Image (cartoon, rainbow, N blue to C red; front, side):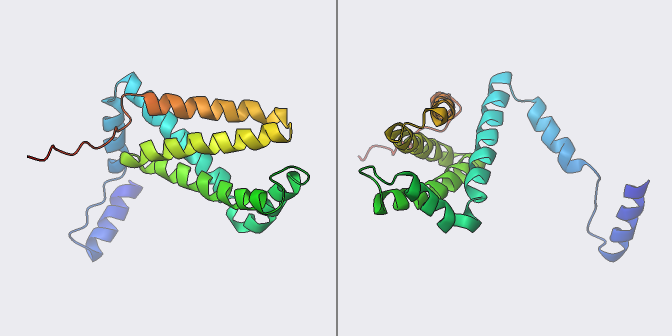
Length: 166
């Protein structure tokens, strides 16, 4: 009843606008119900990883300098201490945000986001093993495996093939 009243009130001001409560939700549910379990699993995993990485990096953006300095401090006394580890601290945040956005946007962005995600896990695993922070390694390996599985899924867009020149 509220939606009918709201529609009538808005319709009085904007006659060409028809609001149908839940129409968008119904369209989404219709599309989702037509997906196979394989497609649903693929898109669910892709979106969940996208949200995870986007917010993992996103919450660090306001405190970027503090985070990067903390990374640099953690690698003091190693051969990547100082500027290299400070640079890595900045890179990690932007890479996480880029991977997250790419996975959420989908399409051709998915493939490149996954490759960047795998490379990021390689960088993180290198640093983790360098300082022997073994408690961080399982999480990074799990992320690496999930990125690999999504990349290898047949629903992930492959390379664009240009037609042969004649």
